[in-house]
Length: 272
Length: 361
Image 1 (cartoon, rainbow over the protein chains, first blue to last red):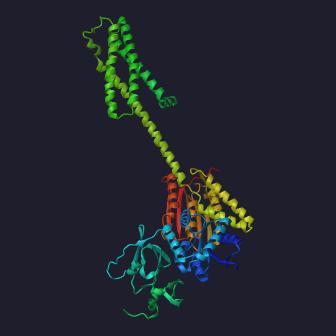
Image 2 (cartoon, each protein chain N blue to C red; image 1 turned 60 degrees about the horizontal axis):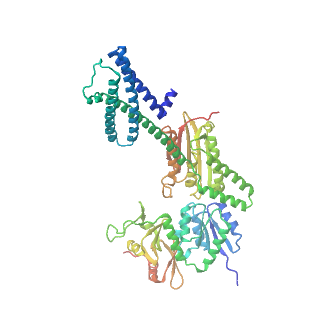
Image 3 (tube, rainbow over the protein chains, first blue to last red; image 1 turned 90 degrees about the vertical axis):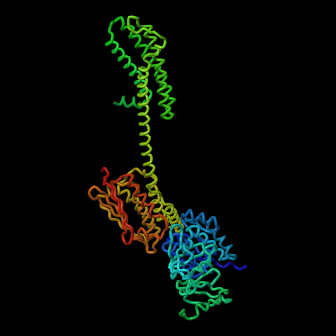
């Protein structure tokens, strides 16, 4: 029997001492290879996209993008196994427990870390990224609350709105439609990615498709709508699938079902 | 004065003093009245006997009234008034029978009153009932006064307790994030064989913990002590944040000896760490100022973070520390304090002004 491939692991924490602590402890596990360290969410997002680690230890409280923000940005095909790291966060820990999501508490207990690693190893073979992402988005919706579209029907009738009002509790955020980069579905929720923020709301893909201007937004996957102007490049994959690369480095999958949409990206813009 | 006070406090002693004194005064006034009316010696013996009997019976009857009134006390005012009037009249009738019988027994016919009908046993009952009504009035008056005093004391005590509880609630509470992150740092230092640093950190942490746990929320400390405790905290945080946490202190020597409520600045410092240093990739600078100006001690905590309104964190996170500090100042100094939050562009500046009290040297 050949030795199993080492788990390529990324450590994300804004405190150097905290990363050092994890690294020292992970040395004891001989099938873990730490491939990098990041000190904030932005770096983490870049490193995950570039190095495709198997496993990420993700601190929740970080400057800029938090651990949760990083998570909301990742697509199912980019999603590594995530183990949350936190010093003290009662609500998050309760939510993790309820959903059997892996987490470790600082200071990290060796026995607990070993149990987490063995759980991760068991899962590496049989994981389904889509289901995992759905679960994680559900977690985010629970911890941060989710919004809904405040006004489903544009006032002008057939004309598509320039602003998408998202109501979350008492607050309504007006998201400029132009700024929406892509929208993706996860379970019962939609994630709207705009200007570096992810808005989670309860709505269906069909509702969103009807609301957005089809000249600007097209569905490219059962669970993805993309802003056509944000797509930078297009790369053929297998079985008639494509990968769309956005300005921010984000890759979205265009599935076979939506193969005919490729023409949107290939043709030259035409005056309507 | 103090004996009078203790008399007022003891319910029983007050009653018996008034009861005995009152009835003696009654007897004396009756005696003097008789003396003016008819001072013949042979008559005076009989009259004095009657007065004695009237006084003793009145004394005993009023004790009965007291027994009834004690049971009436908890009833509604209407019931008390009706029952008191009724009791007074009934007791006056009984009392009158006793007094009139005494007249018949101990005074002789040469005095003008001769009973013509048995109903005359009740004569002058109205007059006696007035007297008992007077007694009733004094009884309830004193009792109401006493209960009012008690209520006032209870209200005062409740207010003091509430103030103390409020101060306890508003005082600084150790942030669990800080504690666990520091323990994590210490654990890493030990794993890394950095024993000296690990030990220093344990010492600083325990000194800071002792300071936060030992402080009475009502107690004031010198600004020097306060700054020292704050330094313990900030040095520990610096271990975690490294160069991202930058500090500036500008505190006048004279201000260091001024008294401040303990851990007054701590929530403001923690806010600055949490909202200005921690969320920024480049970190931030925290500036602490202190100076004595006239009768005021002026303190300020400033950061170069995102300020008040632009904080990305939802909810009132930063508000809690600010509100608690302001309320604590209001409870301790009432309107003799100043609290202001200024948009520093960039950052937030919190300014406090409190009466300048110097520590006794």
